[in-house]
Image (cartoon, rainbow, N blue to C red; front, side, top):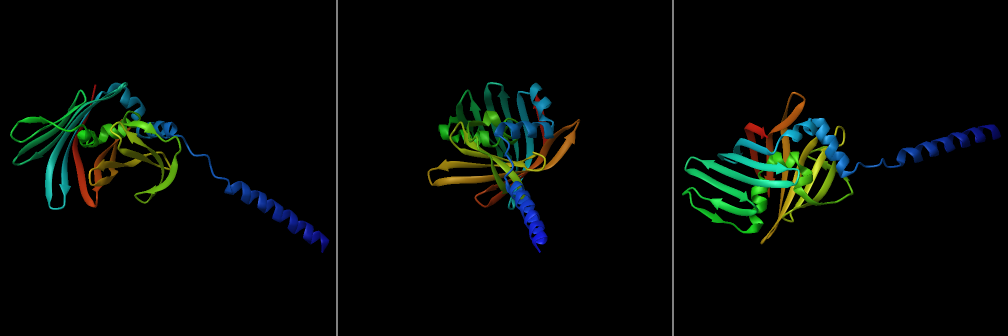
Length: 235
């Protein structure tokens, strides 16, 4: 009887040690480690070395309406550069732009006028591929603590921070392979915060480098689907 008690006690002790060791949380990656891992996973580490401008054209559908967009944005080692975002409809084209830090709008009549500085996020927010490729340039401040959350039904790591305009921006990475899944953007507006969810889809790989060719944006319950037909990465 004593021998059985000793055996059970030994097994129980081993189980406790194993359970304790298993229960210890794994160390989470740092934001820089996640950015680097995503670059490696998508083949962006070598890709970004030779480009300064990202241009993309898409068909956009929301509800029963549709239009086209053309965006173009610069990025260098020192920061984000000039950018434009065009909405192309049958009755004309409207353009929003950033030039040397100034924000402007050119209507369908061709007249250009300056916009308030807080409209900068509207221009930069539509540079979807630039925002995905250059997260370190997009974030002015960054939380060093990475969170484990769920994004679009996938267990993910979250890196949070703020943009240069003060908007809250968070990137999400697949826990399994560090692929970038999308991001959240929350812009402060006069009537309160405007949260938006961006989901990257339709990934295509060429020469070891992957890009998303579809994007879903949930803007306060309104869904916008961007289907890209041209993506240019220019020197």
